[in-house]
Length: 325
Ligand code: TRP
Ligand code: SF4
Image (cartoon, rainbow, N blue to C red; front, side, top):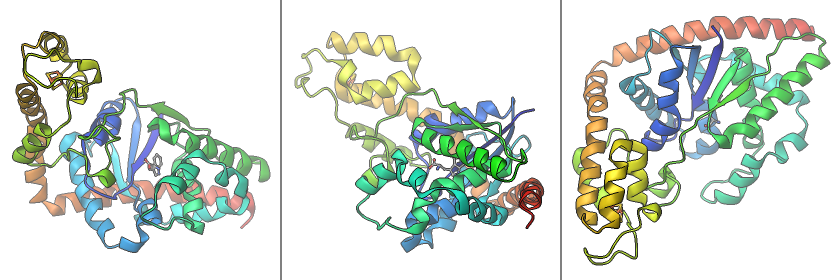
């Protein structure tokens, strides 16, 4: 079986964007690949270092969400990055020969430096973010890395770092991993901007039914539709895009109703919340059970740590031998 590694940063609660943008995909991949799913807590620290104490809480919370939606610890290996020290060791090795220019040119770096104003990210560590990510991936000699489009530059860098190591030390230790692009279109937040914790426009996987109803009821719709008798334009309505993504079988019907003005927006949104709540219900149920069973979570993560460490230690040994250190 080919191997997969992917990760998420524990910087907040998981939301519908994580579900359609990553988790749905991870769940499917579990049957075809040997999967390693990692909580990237060191990567979280790189941007949240001022608020480090919140990270461990989100680590467990995110793992509970993973398990609730169907990541299966009998099929996949779940582990916490900081519990496998080899990630930092290989990160350091890679950082010795990764040219600054590669990192300074990285589009994700430039974008975040431009956009994130609430934290000071002009740090040595943050510039090296993709170097740590390369270590994550290459330690396991992953064949494929399921990621969103925004992560492609990091994968390109990972391949360059891999090539550079192999050529410097004249041994083909590291792989040349490829992306598995998540197909689903990007889900917009409640306010029509990108769904993100920092905009406060998310529907979290663990949100209560009442909160989901309230938040969906407040969503913007087609601004030209003022009266019930006005015909709507579903193509520019964010509510409609949720239908397309979550309830495709209702898409045609809602389109018809909306463009013929036979369904009001309030009603349309009520129906949408009903479906979303229904979709999340089984997750909530499993979540409730898991929250009561912390020892089970700890056990899963310990098993993951052991399995990950075995592979990571072997790769690091090979790398050290190649360098003669
Ligand atoms: N940078 C990734 C993100 O923000 C998270 C991540 C860390 C990751 N290490 C990884 C993803 C290794 C894939 C493989 O989404
Ligand atoms: Fe949007 Fe539904 Fe209103 Fe049409 S009826 S504008 S799809 S909320």
